[in-house]
Image (cartoon, rainbow, N blue to C red; front, side, top):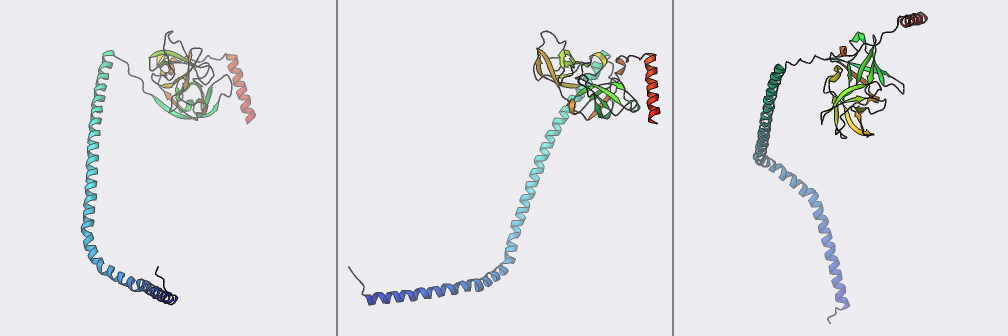
Amino acid sequence: MFRLSPARRAMIQRITFALLLVLSVMMIALGKTDQVVLGSLSIAVMSAATPTLEILSRPADLLNSVVRRGSGLLSVYQENARLEEENARLLEWQLAALKLASENAQLRDLLKLAPEPPSSYLTARVVANSGAAYVSSVVVNAGRENGVRRGQAAITGDGLVGRVTEVGNRAARVLLITDLNSHVPVIVESSRLRAVLTGDNSARPNLHYAEADAVIKIGDRVVTSGQGGVFPPGLPVGVVASFDREIPRVEPYAELSRVEYLRLVDYGLGDALPNPPSLPRAAANARSSRSARSSAAER
């Protein structure tokens, strides 16, 4: 095996150390040159090439602009096609509606059907409730001075709430459909079965007087039938939610316990309600004297 002498090995180590030292100095010098000289050179090259790059970028910008405009035109074309298709569908629906309106007018003419009376309404705020366990009614801040009449329907955006039963000059009482004295002729929308919605002072009134073999399911919609002349047909009331001893119970659409505003709608059907019983003359005089005494006491 070949072995170096100690003198030769020491000489090689000194030469290697010198070479590494020279290489390190050269690398440090090149690093300084890159930061100073090459940085200035790169800036000069970029400044000289900027006009050329700007000229070369113009076709690219023009191409991008053309692409964007083409994409915009394509979007406009697609939107125009969609609108034309939608317009065609709307025209079909318009023709169908005009046809149905014409047929309806012809059928009304054949049947000599009396037109429905125009309806008017006003909005009132609930200022008090019954506060009793056996009465379900609310008081609103509108009365005879505002055009409120007995028999007007009280509704919300969800459905029927009740009807006006008592009217004062500036306030009125609304009997809710959950009250024990409330009886509303209704119809089960899916099967067209007629029944009477009867309140029992619970949250869910009952469906009574339906046919013995009537098929009523949970989820069936219940609307007014128009019979009895109190409510017009088609007012949403609620949905069948449960059965109590085979008697359907209806969950009203309106949250009766959270009603703040009511729309009192006059369908011109108030004359169908019986007039409230008149007080005897003695009772009326007693009430008058009590009112006079309370007025004098307030003064």
